[in-house]
Image 1 (cartoon, rainbow, N blue to C red):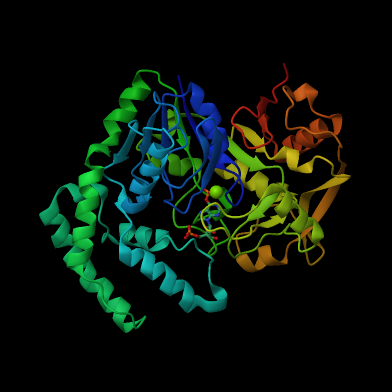
Image 2: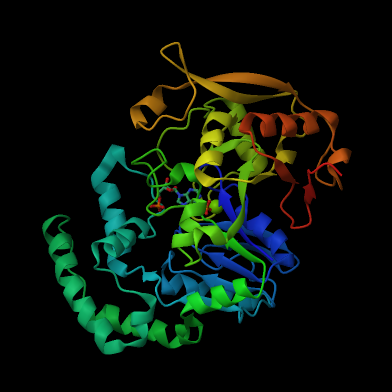
Length: 426
Ligand code: IMO
Ligand code: MG
């Protein structure tokens, strides 16, 4: 059938987990391709409410093969905890596989993430402190350990010894921290290996056989376009590419294999952690949206910064992802709003800025220009079709669609998998 990449269009937390959980009903495979357990994908389905950090959100369907691709950095302890939690809720997770090429998050990555954030002080990135950045640094520096290494204890230990020499030098001299013990880490990780063994495979033949057989493969993005290492508000970004392009590198499918790219956007904006966010609301409205929508991080519990929809950032995101359609989530949060603002442009020093700037300092100076739309009183949560949404809600969706220059094909309200409707003209 097709390979569909589903990506975050904003700063993460757009509701990707819910949309995947919903679309996976028809899928054969769901593949996580980027990030690690910094992601927090919330799904509410008949099994319960789950916040998945590593396991693909298709796991609730026994017949959907769930792949943790090579582009993900894997903390084995989190992975095992997550599978155990799922089992407690009757989800067997026997349909899970992990790429032997995926890199491991090691204890020194988590430690260095925290120590480096502390060292940055006021300039801290506000990372999730899950060791993501340091793990990707090691991958690129060619000093990483991979999931497949777990199956070869002698080689694992030899590589660890080599790497730990360097990490301990850094820990003791730069951060004045005690050195870590290779024996302890090795013992801990080889115990993980015993439990992870059944999941570890070469995922490339699996993916390409599925593709050749015409299966429906969903690539599940983590984070969002504006956290991309190249295109986000650098250096306040994450350390892998959340874009659709990252979906090929992080899975082993080719760019021409992807048939469509669904961008997931919230009906407003949120950001967690530091870095500029032009439409952030520092007033009661920001607090109101946060409380109504429960905008607290699924991974860290931190309050998310809230603001109006930003179509300048959104257009940029549509472009760099090659989005072919959009799923707009959390529309119900605006039920009862008198009016809703949408950022249609920026001003810097009184001059109009058309595109999302590359320099952090310039993004910080951007003053949003807003267009205001009439709100609606009705509850949208139970709407069964687009036509049944209040007229002003329909107008809001169509305005976002026009301003982004990309079709909105799905609209989602509420947390449950069935609360999603087609926005395509019937
Ligand atoms: P999902 O998949 C929102 C943010 C962190 C921080 C920055 C760098 O749920 O959308 P990192 O730990 O990656 O080095 O932190 O990126 N961040 C996210 N924000 N949603 C996420 O994932 C995020 N993953 C990382 O808050 O600002
Ligand atoms: Mg999240």
